[in-house]
Length: 227
Image (cartoon, rainbow, N blue to C red):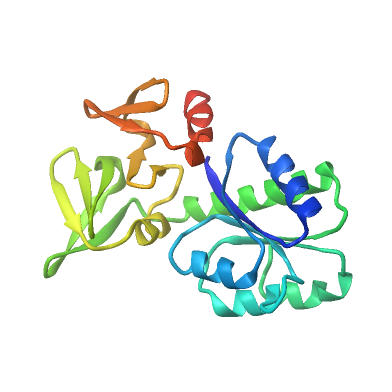
């Protein structure tokens, strides 16, 4: 399973610790580090992630206000030096609460708990989605998807039996399709993990098409080869 995450933190040492711990898990993909709540909110309004590592004291927009400002289904792990926010945090049904300075062992417990929660969510999902295309909704079964390509304002969903053009964004598609089925590998591409034919250096072959893997999603290769 691939889990995308972000760090929302304004302490340099805490950021480096979190980045180091994340790098030890091949199934965690770091999509960004944000030192202010304002920048984090802008990102979360347009991008989907599975896990947020969130400091509570981050300037003008604190962690609590940030959660009240965004609509996200991500697992939330608070990272803070203050334990008085614990009760307030659990009002948001957060995944875990890490008190700084936390150890790698404690960090592991938190991300494994998040991974388990995400897996349970995915197991309860359906096997298809309905995509807005033109004036109607088109049913697409997950097992028919080959890859999804960005084309300007449109996304083209290539399936085994058809192609579907939609104005729905990658952000919206990432929220609709579980990452263990169709995963983002580039800013312009998502691919079905089961439909990958070959991996050559920094490219994935799907349906006789070679798709580049960007640096952000480099860990995807490790996860695919271990499946």
